Amino acid sequence: MKELIRTLLRSIRVSRRISAQDLRKDLKARIRRTYLSTMLLRRYDSRNKIADIAGYKVKFCTYASLAFLFNEIFVGQEYSFLTSSDSPFIVDCGSNIGMSVLYFKMIYPRSHILAFEPDAEAFLCLEENVKLNELASVDTHKKALSRSEGQTDFFYDQDVPGRLSMSTVWARMPRQARTVEAVRLSRFINRDVDFLKMDVEGAEGDIIEELDDEGKLSFVKQMVIEFHHHLVPEADELSRILCTLEDAGFGYQLASHLERPLTRRQFQDILIYAYRKDSASEVGQRA
Image (cartoon, helix red, strand yellow):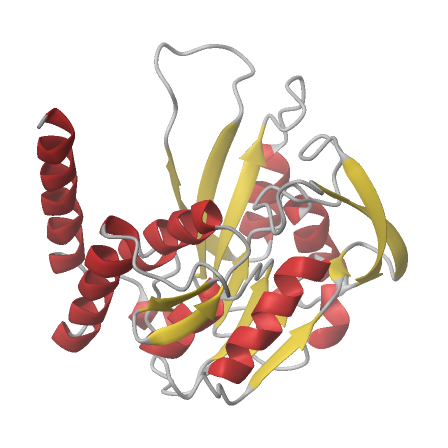
């Protein structure tokens, strides 16, 4: 009985969060149906690992990561953004299985998306999800993003395919390593970027600085960066990325959660919502 009550209370809380979203009613209904059927009742094809997510067929690696991504992206709306363009150019760094790609296509069906994912298993799901849903204007790249071109170590968990904390940074995923192709993001950006999403598990500082060094941050109008604070407990480097953004003309908001009681050197995910202060894209920023 207690478990049933907890489930009902959780369902009410999630339903309220969905109702409060700044989305069309039909999109809210799609997200709510997904929560009730796939997340609450766990109705999905477990043999082929395919689920219905907001009207899309989604191939996934593990149910746990699927549920986390759905809650973060579709319920939490972490990558929500406004733009005056009905066909925005979106750069998705760290796409994993493509849940963010599907979300972007849900809110902007005519968007052009450039998606990067270096993990072999996650990339297979990403490609399959683009094909399953016949998504147009989505370019996928099985590559890691780095300061330089070539090969780099990619740390993953062979027991958990598609694990969300896979990284080119050993401190984020101190497990097995495989070699993957690495590229500089700057060479892919030669036009205005309406939205840049970055969840690269510790490599975000290097990638932002590489864009800045090559003069490509000026192409970006808005972005969301997941910054991994205290990935190395003694390293305090948040100011590094914020100074780069400030010097490039960006304003920003920060969002995070920190466990209590407060302890020193605690790992913390910090979302950086950044926008160009000298750009018309500010019209798309919520007050």
